[in-house]
Length: 292
Image (tube, one colour):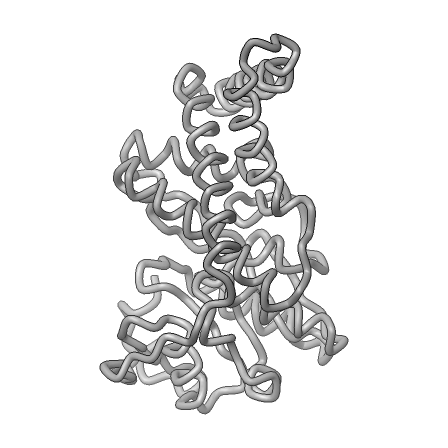
């Protein structure tokens, strides 16, 4: 769709993602903002699907899952399976898999690398909290819900994004997710129990290590590892991929990393806004290869 007047692409570069997106939103002239990461691969159907969902004036936000590309490496595919499993990601599983039908939803199913928002409402609510990264979209979506607007998750509105290439990078990613969740809770003063389960898990492991001579204290860990193996076998049955022996270890690392991130975020308190004077906002000319 060369020079299509219905669409514009705005590129925001810098080291303060929340502020970058806010500045880009101010530069936009369209009615709908569609937030993507620079590695989000979309199809043209996403745009039409988004517009169709927003034909309802009460719908303010539309989003879908971020899927792992089939040509990712073996390790990246492993991370993708862990993130898209209920045992791995719990309530936010549907951010990483196609599941169900188009439905009303909350921030638990929406992800910022594939998120459309009405521009007028985005500006009325002052956009993303610039002190948060990550989790800026979660805090914003809570304000959207409080304002009485509806968010929609549509499984067919997908993007494909490669997972982290190394275990170290994956650990850092999950740690930052925990830190962001904790800092979001400090700002909103909401502490959902399900979001803090990894922190409770870390606390349990510390207690179990201190009092390791009490065998009964190890029972929850045995139950946890059993559930991890069951989840791994379910992935094996569904995909035929031989991750069964490795996945429990990745689950364990993932949950500890997230728990430590939560702890770190709580200890460090509310974050301060990140100011980046080098932010660059530019508009990209549309052509036939822009969307594929």
